[in-house]
Image 1 (tube, one colour):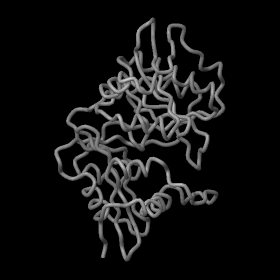
Image 2 (cartoon, one colour; image 1 turned 180 degrees about the vertical axis):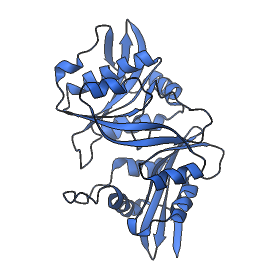
Image 3 (cartoon, helix red, strand yellow; image 1 turned 45 degrees about the horizontal axis):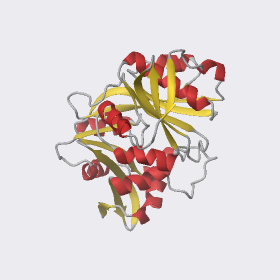
Image 4 (cartoon, helix red, strand yellow; image 1 turned 120 degrees about the horizontal axis):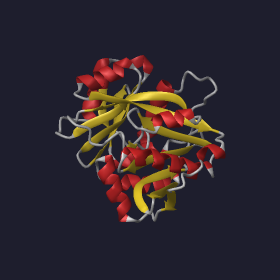
Length: 294
């Protein structure tokens, strides 16, 4: 009999094994790592993580975080040998109950996953592209003459106010996580003497596939024109210190074509789905932190 219950710290290795069997098992060069990703432990501590157990073995798990009135599904994985629509639906309901909150996630390209989320009330909004730039040419990322980058004070409450307004929900704990656990550096972007955006460059966001990756995001700006300028400025700042840059860009964001023209490659893409009748953030103004915490 399958039992769904809340996870404990001791369940994290088994849950990560389920993730591994789904996402990484097709690459024979990849060995299962001993280190659990920091974000999984963080989600357990600040969100909801449920596991499905059968005969004492964890065969599936799901996790979600709630910030303000937004609940974001961070994970939903079932062992390939145990996959069924009923198990996925039960896990989804365990971490995203009918609570009146906005539910959202980034759905993989698996049509079964997308169908599950649509049936649960989340509607597709736009594709989100995972981009990668390796060995960047510094000359391609010169700062625009009217742009200035300022390293921010991590305790500056203005960062939280900007992020809350542009990302659509208050999440001070996430800003602290990126700085504490992922070596995130908060930045202000100033144009013609005026602050037009904010962003985070995370030098410790690597994993065992890309241990040296630098992750850019979140980044937010007041206008689409400033949004592109802020993204380019963040990349200019990052390439001074890293040779592998990753950024997740929503399809409507105006910087997408420019990044592809300058050498970024699409490594994968997801679909952003949400139960909100209107988007709670503007995808022309906002770059998410990635698929883990949005």
